[in-house]
Length: 148
Image 1 (cartoon, rainbow, N blue to C red):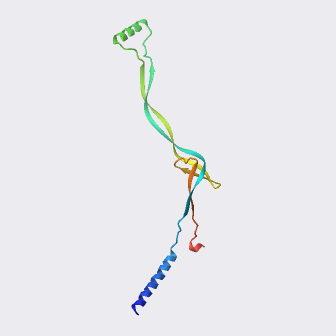
Image 2: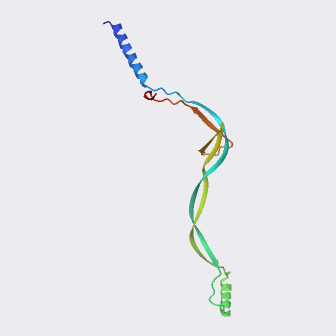
């Protein structure tokens, strides 16, 4: 055998192997995509409720207790206050109290919209306003070779 014949044989064998390998591969076409706008019908916020607990001081103010209502005790109390140069203040009884507060914050929005007469609902991270940009993609369904 001559060398050119051997090269042609090897080339033809390589081409046959390439054709067989190509027949086993599935070719997937890129999607046909376009963008349009849909009319928003309704937007409903979805809230997350958080509870926070904080310790606050609560004080009960009540007048100072007096031992008895006799004249002598009132006079002694008035003299004592005058000498100490204090104004009588109510006694405070304070205690630490846990106070719970609830906070509601929007975490998403349920959006109802219509496009070409069909209604749709999606949960979105932001309020879209009165128009919603949508992506329209069309891809054919191709069944496997053995199921045709």
